[in-house]
Structure formats: C-alpha cells, structure tokens
Length: 165
Image 1 (tube, rainbow, N blue to C red):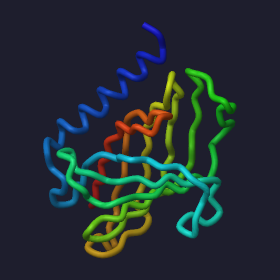
Image 2: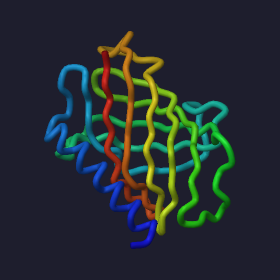
Image 3: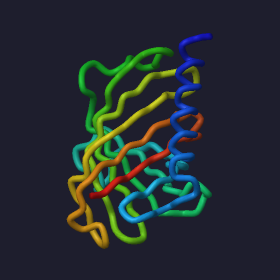
Image 4: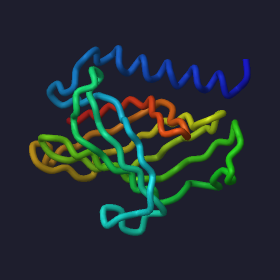
C-alpha cells in the first residue's frame, strides 16, 4: 500500500473514532464535537491581523446541524514548510490561531498542526489550548483538537473536539 493511501486511511479512522466517541452529540456539558466543513482559503482580513492567510469554515454537528463558523489565521510554520507545489509524503508543522464562533459564545486557541501531504490533499492533526473565550464560555480553559483530511478540491473530512474544564 502506498504511503499516501495509508495516511488517508489513518485520517478516516481518526474521523470515525471521533464521531463514534461522541455519537450524535453536538454539545454536552463542557465538550463540543463536530465537523469542520466548507473550508475557504483567502488573504488575511481584519480578523487575522499579521497572518499569512486565513481559512474560514462552517462548524456542524456530527448529524450535520449548524453549530456556527470558524476562522483559522495561519501565522507560519515551525521549521521548514513543504515546497510549493507540494509533493506527496512531505511533512510540515503549521502554526495558526483558530476561533470557533458558536451560538453560546466564541473560543480561541493557538494551534500546532501536523500536516502530511497526500495525493489530492493534506492529512491534518491540530491541537491547542484555549486562550480566550466569550459568552457562556467566558473564562473557560481547556483544549481544541481536530483531525482528518482536507482535499485540495475544497472537501473537508475533519472532526473537532473542544474540551473545557
């Protein structure tokens, strides 16, 4: 099996495991889980001062119900980024700040994203600690994690988990 196929299969397993662990729950106490959908990349806006670029996305429950939206402000890389155009198997670590805007408030976390490029996309696993929160989440501490695959054609199969203390 090719390394790209193995990585894509692992990404799918991560996504399925995340959905199975939270079977159908959008928000339970201090845990929020769902999917990142409809990812659109563009130049940085006022939401991402000093960023290299940003990605805006929808947040949906595992059942597909709208939870809100989010923004990823990409600041750069830890170490050397992959060349452009990318090649399958190239690994890089991207540094970004994610903000999730939900009905009950917002959550912001600087993220470290391990990325491996595969044919037609990139397998990602990001994690970070919450540094700011508003609304019902004001003062919350905890973490944000996501895993899956982002296809260059714009498709996303990414699951996320927010855990607050």
